[in-house]
Length: 362
Image 1 (cartoon, rainbow, N blue to C red):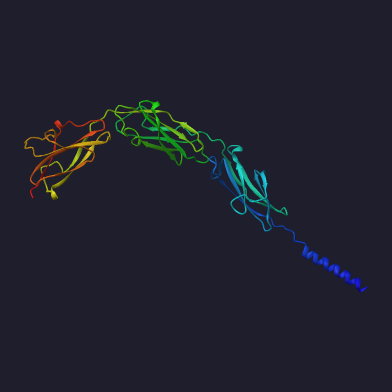
Image 2: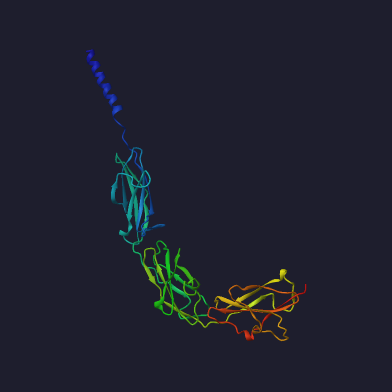
């Protein structure tokens, strides 16, 4: 009889121990999951505030006290893609879904979310994000050519071309590339000469003809010029503007002014070592580059007005508006630089009055 009780007691102890040792408590804790969306390296991928274009990455970060079994993604509450059983992102707990938004309807708000499940089928739900989908990419608008106006006559040797560009796609704001086409003689001679980018649109762009890599950066007198702006968006779509024509006017004669020493009979102090720097200011109404012939001589002993043609030429083909000469105390000197522009326009020295200065006594 005692043996029976001993056996029964042993069996009950084994059963009780089995309950506490062999059985695990039920898992009721759901996984935690959050999502973020970012643009990809795909050139059609754009993420701007609450709008999306192209292929983007939806990144779910999921964790669980026991372990994440599966992650699913949902667009408008409908499951998309394949269930993910292993992380595939850069982080240890990141699950990445490539969202092909170009397959959706344009200008419609879509939602994206994700859910994570553990082995006990506990469900963790992420926040739901909403985005306006922008699918088609329209070509940029024609650039409005502003300055110079079509058929304009310009008087200067260079001019700043100005235009305004814009794009019909507003979500997101696109960075446009402008290609300046420019040439002389006829519209068929235009070539691309400059590229510039706009960070925002609409935007006013500019390019100076002084940047033209040509035989000369100065516009030739009485020559016809043509220009056009090609606008390109980030997706490779292009739009050409109208072609505008302008011409440079007749070339004007250059001159000089503002002599140092000034044109006067008031004596100046004798310079140290006898070296005096002559200075002057160029005056070309067209803005052409200039070279100078310098006429210089001591007092030619004339009681009347002295003209440049009465003086000898000291130097020529100078590009700098300055020159150092040796002078002596107590002597009056006459001088004047005569400029010549790129198109060989120059002053007539016969009726051109010479400047003068007097070096005082020591």
